Amino acid sequence: MKNSTVLLVDDNADLRKLVSKTLTCLGNWQVETAESGLAALQFLENHRPDLILMDVSMPQMDGVATINEINKRQQWRSIPIILITARVQIHEMNQYRHLPIAGVISKPFDPMKLPSQIQRLLEQWSPTGENLRVAISD
Image (cartoon, rainbow, N blue to C red; front, side, top):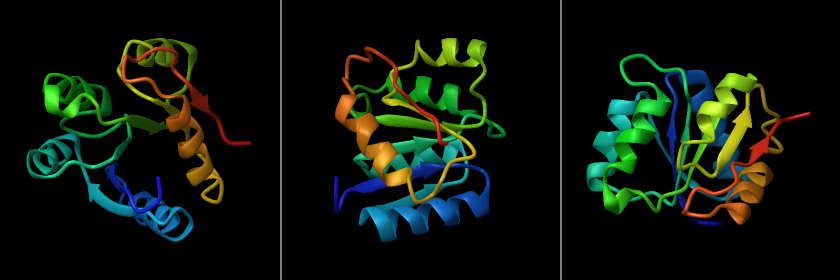
């Protein structure tokens, strides 16, 4: 996925900086950021990233609601989405299984491992939404 564009959606500015630097330096990816689900939808109106990394807990429109909005638009459905979240309890993971996502990376995560975790999830991703994959950092 080198030289690909990633849309990072997270309301935490420090996390956006960390992930952007990690993916740019280690993954050789171009990173665009959005601080909310609404900002992500506005970005998608004019741009098509190769991947969306999405936080779950955000004000105004959380990650799940944002994914549901993305899924309503045919032209956006083929963009793989990976959740990056601390919400990985069993009942939360059961909710994610019904979403059209490539997988979940749990917070906290090791920034040095993030590009390879993303790559593994993308290699197993099916646009049909089968078999949710989870990458949990050690």
